[in-house]
Length: 172
Image (cartoon, rainbow, N blue to C red; front, side, top):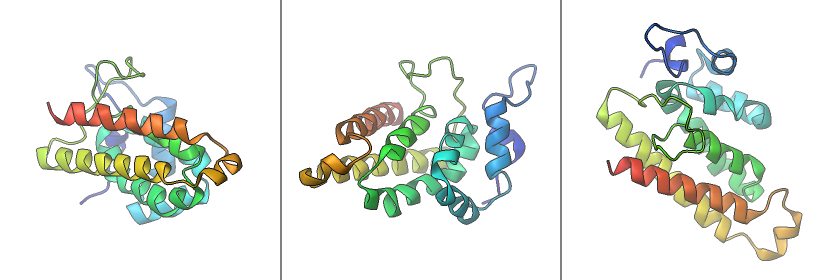
């Protein structure tokens, strides 16, 4: 699988084409040219700084780098009892799910890929990650709730919304 190009980071090339937004340009500067392993190492080093880059990547770049989010949540956030980064990441992912009722309705969605099998695989991975987070949040020991930086019900709500929108888009 080849690395995403600069154009893959632009959400809508349009007709006539437009240049990248500042956010797309920042996502490219932070992750462009990196393998998923390199991107994971960068992301883990400062997730609060890099998490929103996933919101502003074009669909192809997002699909390529989605394993970074998946691995981070499974290996790091699950040990942190799904802190506030988990809530924000759900909102970053949801911007890539084509649904007219999405919170970011002015955002122009791009397909995750021209390859239907790739799109299916990405949606399946998003669905699996949603279920992982929702189940993980439900299993948090109630006695630890006071120690959390973000209420688990908000995290569960965000990932449930993402799951529902993804299932709806996937069934089309």
